[in-house]
Image (cartoon, rainbow, N blue to C red; front, side, top):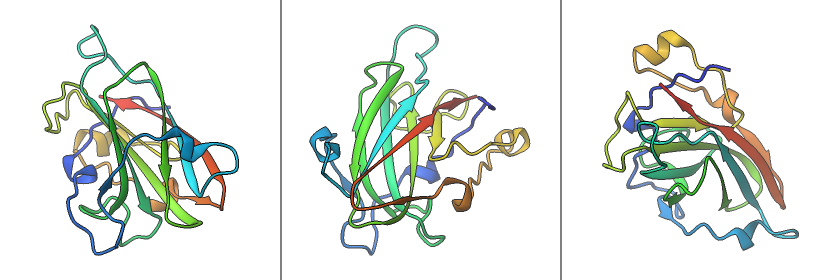
Length: 167
């Protein structure tokens, strides 16, 4: 698996959306991913990296998107976002979704917590862990296609694992 990654700010920064629930920052309420709950996505994020080899810093942002071309990774089209300080190299997040259907998840680790996208340091990952080409990483055009990242969520809790990628 390719572990080199450049993450553009346009992928995950969004403020407005025409969907009623779009753009909601929510707490990481793990009770919404308990047995018998849902629909929701339980995301395990693996491989969070320390800032300059020292300690885990910054902010981890996990966002859900409708699994449609008009929404996937579009500015302001995310549904729910959980933001957290990194608490270990592996973290879990619970993201409720409005109804059963097709969704995608994107993760960004602002490693130094400056609120800006630092291509040479920040990390990211996507549902289904799509392969990222070296050329697209070097040119800053990751362009993760919806077909490689979308997944179905039923009425229960869908569990997924996302491996982080850093340059």
